[in-house]
Length: 396
Image (tube, rainbow, N blue to C red; front, top):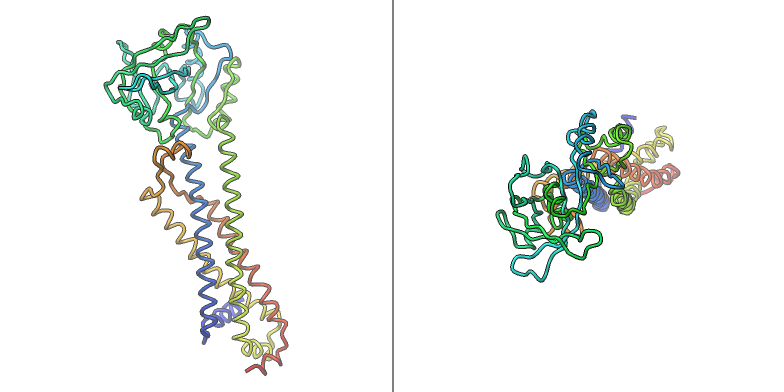
């Protein structure tokens, strides 16, 4: 096998003609570019998925236990303590969500829809350790929403809440903005206002506590934690961050698979250049192949030599393309090349995307590309191995 490999390399290097050098260079560059494009595309999709998952884990609790009929304030403390005692749970807080209309500073006739996330304690993505107890009600506002409302730290913000059951009066609360947060997730940054739970329940007596938010030491251990939580609190309906966004991640997976298939076809087209290079190589070295057969080399050995020559040529392109793809991904991530302005962040859900090259994607790309190169090399090598050695020796 070492002899076959040495002969294949000699075939590619020894007295190569202009046509052979041109086709070999075109095959090398084509395979390298197609492989690099495939790696960069998969890295972009992996980075996009991770960016969304990270933002969701940062802004939402890892699990939420909803109470269909709501929770009473006197029961929340005991339920939260029992959940916090479960292994792996780092925080358990009462939560409720309220839709409202926030007044725009300087333009009260154009209110903006907002979501009040009322928590018993400040969330981890803020710098607050506890809610101030003295009036007015303090609030943390998303960066995008604060820009649209024209408010900053220290400003007052008027928010109208839904009316109580049987009433047409819209209750309102005046909030003092004490922090502007940014989670790189457009839904949170452009819609959310985080406020103390007790103050919101007092301002809107008709509201009830929706459930308990649960944070874990390991965000990916939601299945194990969910089983323990359902045993401890069977009256609550638990859901996790992956289940709440299942359709989004399913769409991203299908999009990644589709792009992989499409770009693999591009690699397949580039691999035909390897076939062209081998055909030119077989023509250029036909007398050498005939001499080897006259000295006792079998057709199978000639096939192996030519196939290895194609694998060396295409494999070099795969290695170069994979190396360049990883380097380009690192450079694009370091420079934060993929950044979205606010109007596009609402569409793509995040404001920037990193390029993440996962080991699985790298192995899949290299394996598939190299497999296509082998398939593209085998057929022209087989046709060349079937030639009559006497005819090859007579060739000029």
